[in-house]
Image (cartoon, rainbow over all chains, first blue to last red; front, side):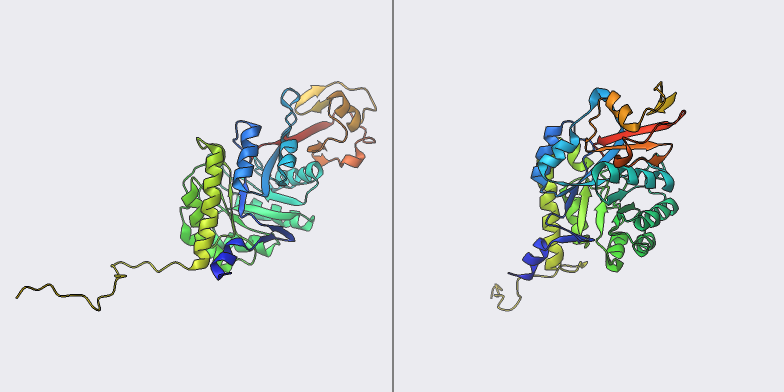
Length: 266
Length: 67
């Protein structure tokens, strides 16, 4: 096999877990469980997020059954937590509920932008690592914070491209590239993806995977978008391995000048 | 009197977490359910024996779509 082919198909490893898909799917926003199940299938994902909320006797769903039937692993999140204390407790409850040590750690600092609260995030990450969790923190695209999160033992870092659900793509690709360059753990681009090209760009920047929810669940055709973003992730991964040409201001002919005929008239 | 998911609830003295879940029609083996009492996790194995003290604030959580 050629190197580029290997780079597209080599597995993603997070702590001691191995995945063959590099697309993580957020389950938020799907209008129907069947659409979610179909999107899971189309996306090829092996790891999907779930949240914990108060039980609703009227609308007790079979979400876990749907996800179990789809054969995917659960990645509980701590969405809605604004303090380290709440996030740690929520992660502990998720471990009880789902029997997993995986957690997508979110500690939000601002309701309007849903941007992470860096100091609280770091405190929560450290506590959860000490408590035996495999911590995947949703973080800003700050390379220094990403390094700190890795230093306290996070199993991956998940920088945003732009705010959650904004569909604004990757607003600072240079920061994401810096995070990739220094990271010793997988980098998962989380938040901001709006369409397939955003996911491709994340992978071209060297991210190890992409986590995507709204871009798929709120698309006009979520199942088709799941397939599109899967292709974007795979294409971007291939392109990263293939090595793109450098950008240049002026043209560089690909057709040789040698042997160019002369059509000068006598 | 205790509080269940933010709403006041009258329960008999000696009611356990497992008893409460039964009254709420939650199967004891249900996957995707977690319980906190006064902001502390109550592990599943302790549900049958964990007696809810008067004034307990109980949170019963389940999986929802998100993230």
